Image (spheres, rainbow, N blue to C red):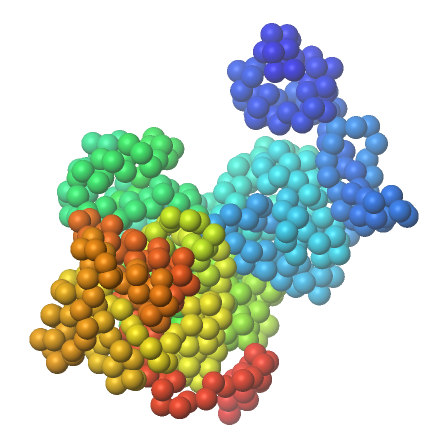
Length: 613
């Protein structure tokens, strides 16, 4: 068929045949040296439109009447459009690292909110694993790829009043501008994109435009730039100064994101990691070492801003937000820093004319807050925030988009929980033989768990328990720490020793701690032969590993230790911030503190009663 399309004239008959075989308009455009719009117009002129068939959810055992459809190019169509007010929601598409099930949670909450408003809801999504693709979630489900053509096919057939693009994460946001342009071109359709305008979304996604906006608002950002060639990248990096954080634009999950320490590393990155062009520039930022990362989820109605929660990441900036444990409310940020965060959140949400959800990532260093990025869409942390503070953010956002104000809904004040909630990640390294379980700017986690209690120590202990990284209250702890982290290690080692744990480590760490009054056993480095810590793990003689990645020379040893910890199922920690949190949790538990056993609803009820007072 491809050979025929290339060689023959594209007649209506050949076009119909190709569409029946599943050729998308974009592929036909490539094969015939036309644009996608030309193929689409040709198809519409010839009356070649998608029809929809119902999926037989009863396997022909008896007649199915579930509103669950897929498109085809046959003559008869099994879906009938109603005259009701209806909204189409774009789902998150196939789940991969970075594009999590959390976006599906947002889609389902949006459906619930719109149904309460008496609006007919349709979903287009193509992942059979998710709740949004259960045939009884929405009024109609279209099991289709999330591309412009397939979304337009549904719009042409159903003629919805509006489309929601902000609940499906990056997949649906990437469709916002092309969809707006296509709907503008199609004068026969009255469908509009609801919520935040795609041009305002682009203002947040486009690095240059966002940088200018932040300057106008007086909001600090880490120094940065972008490059469309190797030469430009080196110039930008030299101007900023190494280390720098490099990443492609318009990606999710920190894909191909790296911290680069020198020119050689940068050159390798530019050659190997990414395709660079004017459409795909590389973003280069000053890497804020030893900064605290902050996440904010908020809902805006273009007048008021509801801050759902300010989350403090336990790992420092440089670990992808999807891989970092985080805590609500923040534990170490000063009231002044939190006020800066609130101020910047309101300014940015209102300047971007957000209607619905926005997620903003910031970093704090030396009491100064920097804005890293803003995403006017649902985020990976919405379910965590909603469960931590007892407010359904995605549902509120959908009601705002449907026309309500935050004031009329009764949600204007930031919730103040009296309990501590911690999100911890689940990492897949036990399924990936040989992979180094170290965290960095590219997302690796495949799930998350949550711990709630009345203080940080117990909440963190619960979260680690749920993540199957159980913190020991007795036994031996092995420490091997890079030089940059050693000053912070002293307090951690003292706490662990006071809690009755035996400490051991490699020579450098042992000597450093001895100078600060902490004495422990020396264990051979892995490359110095046996018996080393890997041999001890094999014999089940180690209960916790704290190992932070070091310079390139000794990285191999650290990698083997971390890998062995995964293989022998020994709890392990790879960042200093997590070690500090773990020491606090062990200290709390050793004081004989009982873990609180309560349902999440009980925590929410207490919070409601306190807020009334």
